[in-house]
Length: 274
Image 1 (tube, one colour):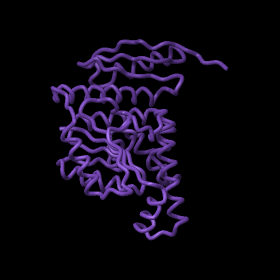
Image 2 (image 1 turned 30 degrees about the horizontal axis):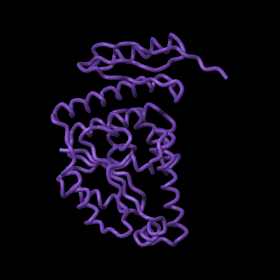
Image 3 (image 1 turned 90 degrees about the horizontal axis):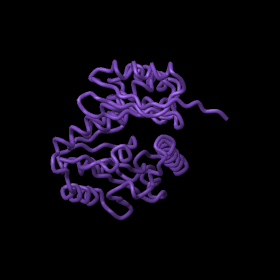
């Protein structure tokens, strides 16, 4: 059992390659669209907001959510951990290579190709002229780069984030899928996979509590709240809040969240002034 995250440039054939690898391994593929549906299913406010964005601001919708509402970032992180807890899964995008970085049993893949080659592929696939295809490739590259940099403050082109980087300029899809297959079959796995799955679930639970708090409290890079799960429903709140009212609200939300049995408060009050 293992988890694979796949970051890919548009036109690199990363989707096709990861699907082929998943078939060889007997794994399930989780696309951004499925991620979206999972998020809608567990948060009614998110679902309502989705309807507004789909109607008023088509294009780059999920990226706009990330930038607008930190609670949704925590929600998507929770979903990453929960999917990882099931094992045997390939997760596309959504910063999964960062959320699940350094986690045992997780293999990170990046699929790339030169810009001009990617443009030609999109031209052929979608019957587009060069200018339209090139504009689409640049736009997708920019949106994905902006999302990762704005939310996680990481450069997704940092090769240190990945265990395997595949350039498909001279590698066939089947060959690339075999590379992933062979690598994943030989990675070091945690000695107790059931214990690791439990840890993934605990990390996911902490992120769900974190999301619930952030839906009600304004947070940001300099005034953030993080939740740590100590197991058996015991959590720790860390970070900064503006006043006692915010502190009380955070504690009320956390203690009232289903499954929470104990809340340890390590929040600090901090008022920013410029």
